[in-house]
Amino acid sequence: MRLSSVVCVLLVAVLASAASSVHARGDATLPELNKIMKHTFSLAYSCGGSYQASSLALDGDYSKNAPDLLFNGACGSKTSFESNFSGDDMAVLSLIGNSKDVPLANVTAHLAFNWANTVGQDNIFKQAVYAAPDTTYAALRSQGTGPSSTRTLFAFQTLSGCEDASEPCEILYAVLDYAKVNYESVSPGFDWTKQNSF
Image (cartoon, rainbow, N blue to C red; front, side, top):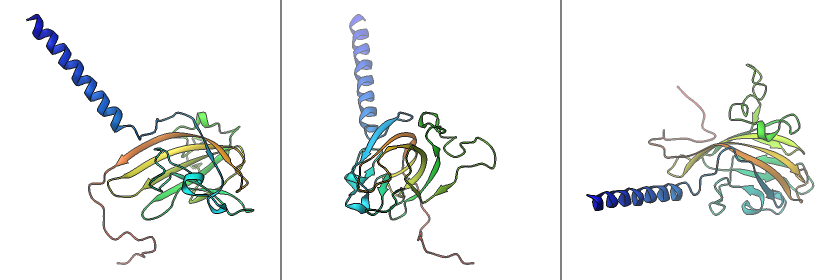
């Protein structure tokens, strides 16, 4: 009786350990939510940069050339942030405000859409936003419709150098929502330029 109790306890411990290690391996590429992180873009993409040097991949995988945020701008021109790159990616960004008035620590998933928290005063979202010093932004992104699709909402704040395409740009960011999505079915025929008809 005693031996069987010990075996049961050991079996439960082994199974619990195996389950937790599988969970850890399964979540290895998922970013932690609501944790402020620092990232540096080496230079802007259109000023000699690359996806590795000029982008942020929230899951840490830069090999797939599908980042979540791109620091862009030609040398000597205004710089911007973009999040919509190709295929059926869909993304919009919002310049919420100056980081003194809109500290990154206070940007919740709710306030990322309506910082004023007032009906009719929603944040304005665009396909690209200019990079400004000491500014807080929000980004909503849906990438792909296949088995490796993701949906994410994140906020970021510029620190220094982001107005010059040839200089490093430092940001702080926090992931507010992140999901790997496996679509059960997708309507065929999506095209960015396809018009509607009866």
